[in-house]
Image (cartoon, rainbow, N blue to C red; front, side):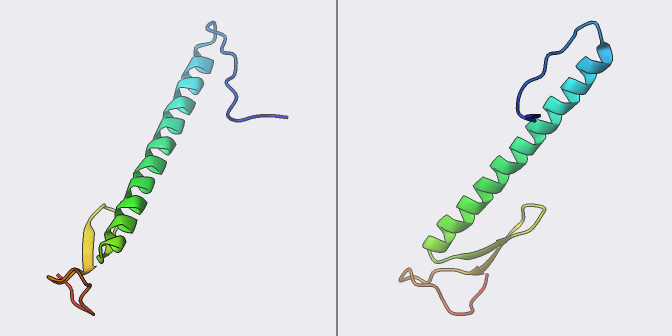
Length: 81
C-alpha cells in the first residue's frame, strides 16, 4: 500500500527525481501554511464571537464587523461599524 506521507528514497543520480521531490516538498509546505492560516482565522473569529463581535473574513483577509459590543459589553442588535 502506498503512503503519501512516507518519505521516498531519492537517488541523487537522477536530477529529475530531486526536482520532483523538491516540488512535492514545496507543495506540502504551502498546504500546511494554508491550514495554519485557516486555523488562525477560525480561532480569531471564535474569540471575537465570545466577546460579542460578529465578524466576516473574506478570501483576501479583510475583516468586516457586523456587530460590536456596546459600552456595557452586550452586542448591539443589528448595529454595524
